[in-house]
View 1 (cartoon, helix red, strand yellow):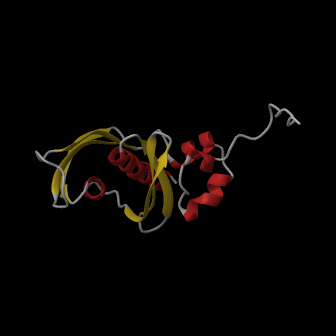
View 2: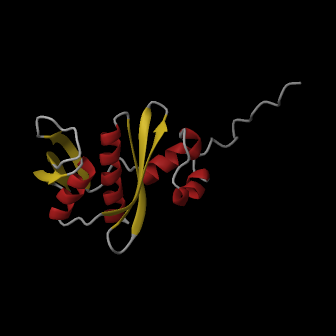
View 3: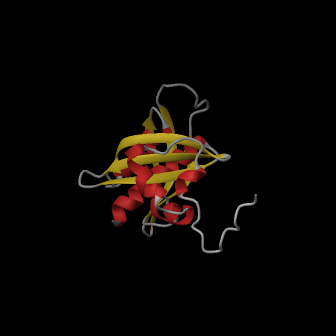
Length: 159
């Protein structure tokens, strides 16, 4: 017995179908109701007032739990600057760089899951007034996390 053909109008799979592990509990219901493009445009906006350019750990060896020195090129609106921070990891360094530029972002939740050949990072962040979920996606776990921080800051800045 063959199954009936799918119509051209059948719904696209939900965004949760993209991930090899469960998404964060607080985001699953919304993601189940969205197709991938809508989810990505909502939670990982490609544009916004904040952009991250170059990112570097300036120490010779960046492995280990001790504080490292990081440098980034940040664009906020039309203003582009170089930022530096010493922190125990890249996410902490980036949030410090943002704070020094007047962008408050406290992460209240952090999740990384496989997504095909990429890593998806989901963060929930707060600016002290509102909370937003955001996603970063990259084959490199660190870049995925940095993208999630930028996406969350942009969601908080534009909502």
